[in-house]
Length: 111
Image (cartoon, rainbow, N blue to C red; front, side):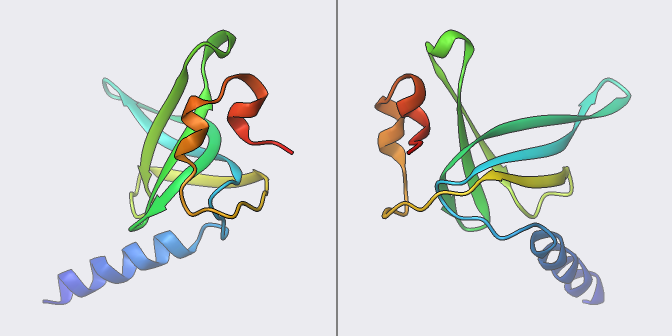
């Protein structure tokens, strides 16, 4: 029983060690990526389009702004090492799925 309580506390502490951010913020996440036996830190930066149950969805524009790349991260995952807010924005919505239809600079909702 103690094992389950300690893992729950560890997960809460892990998710609270990051800065507070909200939907619409442009953030950079560094996570451990395993290739064979090697581990390295890989970064993914994009705009937060959804935040639900300690999971965030990040979206960035791919090569030549022709397609978008989305990735879902769990904040309680031990693979996430760093989280940095690059630009903070205020939106009046809780989900920014309409940004999927935008192209170029408009895809980031920058003002």
